[in-house]
Every structure is written in C-alpha cells, then in structure tokens.
Length: 143
Image (cartoon, rainbow, N blue to C red; front, side, top):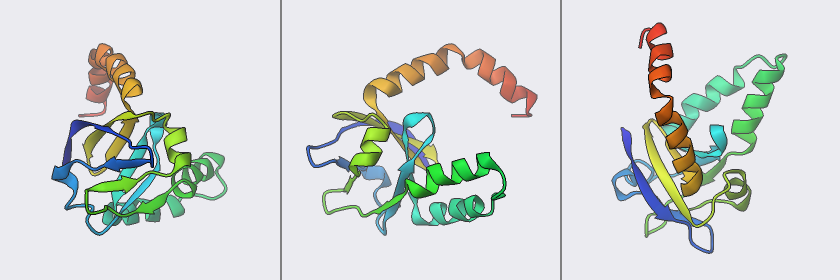
C-alpha cells in the first residue's frame, strides 16, 4: 500500500529518489507514464500489467478510448531503481509534468504520483478548498 507525501529533488541528470518506504515494491522495476492533471504516474510492474490489459481492451472505435490509451501507453517507460534508490525520469516526462528541481512524490494506494512541488501545492489548495463539494458528490456515489 502506497501512502504519504514526500518532497524530493530531481538532480541535474533527471534522477529522482523513490521514498525509502516504497523501494522494495519497485525493486524489480517500475513503469513511469503521463498521469492526469499533468503529474506522472509510477506503477509497480504488476499494477501496470493490470492497467495495460484494461487499456488495450478499450473500444478502438471510440476517440476518447484511443486518446486515453495513447496518453498512458505511448508515454510509458520502464525504469529501474539504482543502488541509491533513484530512477531516471526521461526528459519528455519531466517536461509533460513541468518538473523543476523540487517535486512531491505522493502515494495513492496502488501508484505513486510525481508532481512539480509548486503545481502540487496549487492543486492541493484548490482541492482542499472544494473538499465539502467533492465529498458531497462522492456521497451521491455511495462513498
């Protein structure tokens, strides 16, 4: 289970330390891809396999299905955790997420999200200010 919020720096080579408490899960590798809201998603190999199977099963004739599959699959790259617990995030993914030096790594149960630190703070403030409205909508869904 991936939970928590951690601040890290991206080095000049584009390497980012995975929080120590998550490294064991990613010891055999991970997949980094474009996420939603201009963050990056990091999946364990097993979680990625589950998601990829669902993505390729989406109806090819529907434009939204094709677009979402392209976003997730074409942008994906496999990474390995080095001896210091870092992964190399490719330039195109760092650009997509607008990552500068400081980032936030957020655990969201089955995936990590990597955010530029400033964008994370903006997103968090916006979401927190709308938390009552969000909770009400989720209540309508039975959550």
